[in-house]
Length: 225
Image 1 (cartoon, rainbow, N blue to C red):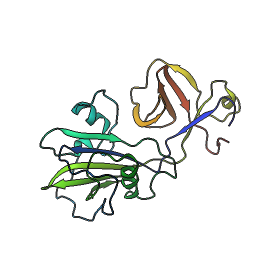
Image 2: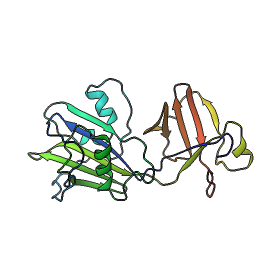
Image 3: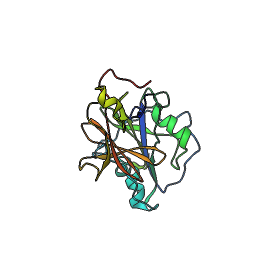
Image 4: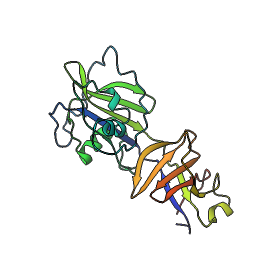
């Protein structure tokens, strides 16, 4: 690894966010029928399947909805939301090659407190699938699987080594006053580092307890060894 370089990639094959009502019936680990075939509802959930996740603090309804991304608004609970959250960063090998493999691996590793069987694909978009677990025609648990972009590498270059050699698409900035207005929390974590991106993804914004750094993307064809 070059001096002064650390790389962070939003490169997991799949990421998952889940949410569930307080309906009980959860299991430990995925069963053979985690995802089943079924007829999508006549009116599938119409909300966006890409909703920013963030930590609101606490464990109440507001915090669980904030952490559950697009899965939370897909619920049709009679009461309050019971559980909600998303996957930690995954390596390329850790994610799934298909949408169905994403929730299977997530349920196996994290064992969320929602049913671990009987989900069907309610709605599909490019790179994203909403799976729902319905009771009496109402969604009591939901999981959204997303395919991330592969091999996007960002570099921390405080000594200017990569900038000098022309490897960076933009300058590294060690301290910013604030995150950009259009930035969103990806949900990726490494120790106290939190990865934020903007729609263009030219720069990764890494938020820590010490402030915010701007990590530029490496130019095409440049890799870290």
